[in-house]
Image (cartoon, rainbow, N blue to C red; front, side, top):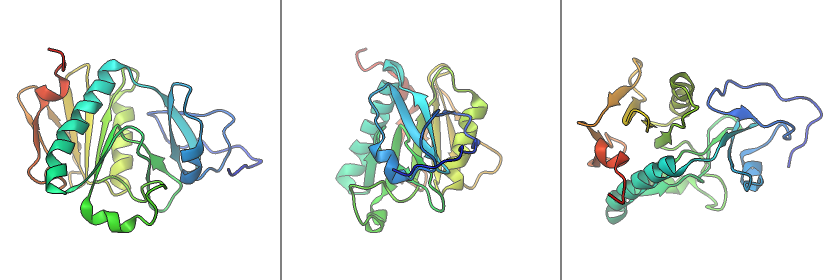
Length: 207
């Protein structure tokens, strides 16, 4: 792991906190070896290690629901790969590795992966983030824009407290479109044909 003798810069990462005392600079490959048994989830932004608290039952269940809905659609069609909350995506041009709650990339991108044991070497085409109670709209907007700047084409920011989903498109400079209880999520041209009612995202699977 890379060890430096100077202090790391403070990147603009309002959705997380910089890990005190972490080596700098780190690589995305280093991120895969970082211990992860302390209740935090780790990401890397411009070589700086950052962390957020682990998710509770509600957020984890929502993420799992979305994984299940996407997987059930894309798997029989062999459209692509759905990843859960431990899939590390390495962004181009910088040592930045983000770990969406749910990620997706199309089958055509598999040819870009020389070694499947290493971080996924591109941004997800679809990234889903389930906001925690202490993450603000501005912080999550910054993360959505980070995804889009890195090549992600579609971002869903899920707000359990409001039971709403913000949908960010790479070609919409005006910001997200908010989907509520009466709306339907769709995969646009990223996951063509996929739809899911917003109410299903937030439904308790035991009800």
